[in-house]
Length: 383
Image 1: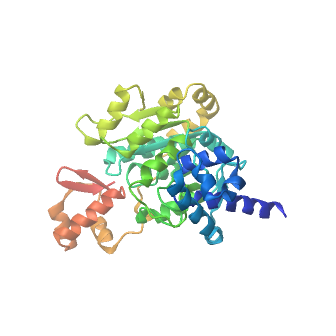
Image 2: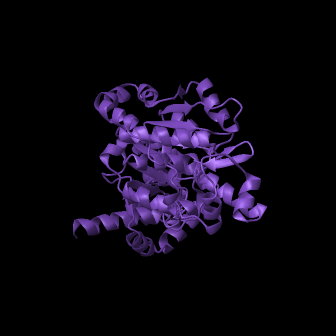
Image 3: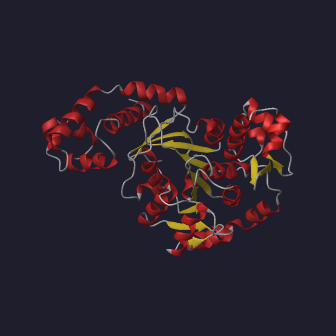
C-alpha cells in the first residue's frame, strides 16, 4: 500500500469515530486512552465501550451503531471535491500550539494550508454588531501584525472578525478562519468571497463535518480552537456574554496572552475590553503593545520585524472596506451611489434614491455591516 493510501485509511479510521453519534472531543480522547488506540476503539463491542468510565450502556449502543453504519467514503469524496484536507491529531502537520490545549479537536478539516509559520499567530475577535471605530482598529492592528509576519486568526463572523481577516489580506499576510459550521457551508453568506480569499492566503478550518449547519452551540466550541491556535487573543469590542469574552476566558485557561483594545466609555461594546483590562489583560493601542505582551516571543519578533512594521506604517492604508470587494444588491448599490464623504441625512437618501424608507433602512443596515458606511447622528457618509 502506497503512502497516500495509508494516509487515507488512517484518516478514514479517525473520521469513523469522530463522526459517530455521542462522540465529542472529550469522549474521543477517553475512548482512545481506555482502549489503547483507534483500532481497538473501532473493534470494540458495545459492551466493551460501555465499560469505559462515563459511557454507559445506552451511549455505548448509540456509538457502536453509528460507528458501524457511517458512510465515510461519502465524506472523503466530498472533501476531495471541495479541495479540503483532513488532518488528524496523530499527523505531523497537526498544529503544534493546538496540541497543547486540554481539549484539542482530534480531526481538522482544512481548506487552504496550515504552515509552520502559523505558530506565530494572534487572534483578533470581537462583536458582530460593532462600531466603525471597532472595525477600523481591528483592521489596522491586523494589517500591521500580518505585515510583521504574524498569522491573524479569527472566526469569519460579521463585524470585528471580518475586519480582522480583511486587514491581514490587505497586507498580503496570512489569515486563518475557524468556522462554527462545516466547510461546505458559507456562513455568513455574505462572506463567501472572503472565504475564498482566506483559503488562498491562509486557511479555513473546522472540526465539524463538511455539511454541518451553523448552530448557536457550535460557536463557543470553535472558540477554543481560535485561542488554542494562537500565542494570544486581542478583543476589540465585546458586550456582556459575548463570544469574544468566551474566547478570552479560554485563552486564559490555555495559558495564552489576553489583550484588549479600549474604546469609548459610553459605547456598549467597550464593556468587554475594559473589563478584561481591569482584570489584567494587556491594553493594546499599537503593535508594540502586542509584542510587549508576548514577552520573549514578542522581543524575538520585534528584532526581526522592525523594518516590516515601519514599512507597513509608512504605506498608505489600503481600502479595507472597498465596495469592489463585495457583491452588492441593486438596492445597496443605489443607496451607496447617492452618498459621498459628506454627512447625508436619511431623508435625503430616500429623496435621492426614490426608494421607500424601509428599503433605504435595509440597504443602509447591510452597507454598515459590510463596513462601507460611517454612521453619524442622523446622518450617513461613505467610509
